[in-house]
Length: 514
Figure (spheres, helix red, strand yellow):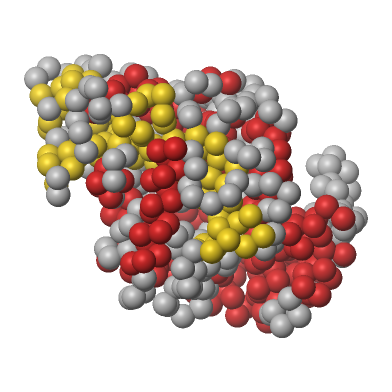
């Protein structure tokens, strides 16, 4: 039993680790609190049972194509702003390092209840692990004229403050908090690391397959407006709050089907709000105006894009589209012709889908992480996860490393993506690196310097390569690029034919996701 600021909670011992699940860190974000910043939870009398995961945030289910690879439990209930704690030594005085986990899912799906994220493995190795639920989709990242932006990110901040103020009671050290996330969770961690309101709360951070970034406000508004058109209501928080929750989720899923991380399209994202996110977080972190002393562990998987193109056969369809798909990727990345030409020279045997996938991955992920590491030499550590899934076509795809980081490769939900036979030695090595980083700030290989050391996690065991992605990253620094057109100007590129082809390709994405 542990006492929190809002009441006492009783957890369970599981395999020698104390586990507390479903602890509310904020009030249920519904009724008058819908689309509003998080508020403190109501205190409770007596002892609250913390044996089961709390409710998950409202979200649409994955399509059948993605559900065969990704698990996303749904737990009903309104108290979705909750967190879980795994600790080897509950009680003040232990002062153990703390790892706070933010799940991914494109800010529209995912939860802390995914079995792959079992924090007991970290607690087994001396880390207090905390995983967080936060609002998703239009509830967490819709942009409205009558509600504050980024309520989902504000949820994460509220959870982080709860951890800082309360974790000592669970055996953690509030001065040794590592904020860790994957994909949208990593993007969120980067935004929080750069936020002025978190200074002093975060000691170090892990960014897995997600850079610090913000989305264009007009892009997020388009998501809301398209949903409003389907729902036949005004694009306001007040109007959306009056819509049945199930209907709202169906409209969100329909609009979201037209988008893809590789091919672009409508999507929710974190936006500059002048408050929690006063500006571009990547700029704040690279210019040294935020989190100057924080160590960073950052990286990617070798074949990030394959998770988005393999389900439903989109990989083959992009290959068939050939030049149209490549031109679409160039437009998405505002890349001039020298950049894809350079990729062709570096990868002469690659098909169009691989060129498109790696080009977009580099633009969105590897280039900004290289830039961030260059700005923080000596305090940045980079990795690449290169072990290929045993399932056909996936390669070392997005999210595959999660079972290795958490050392949960044996659970069925990990095998959905990795297949059978994930090497335990690689799980041990990767998990140990994260434990060491959360404990000391050093994962076990050389920090970033002029030689660009990158730890490669692959079949043959971990090794260090120097500058394995430098040639591709250099293309973006030296080749000509097409500037992003102003929304007030008339675009001069790819032409009506390409625009029509890209619309057909996006419709294909939507059809496959159904």
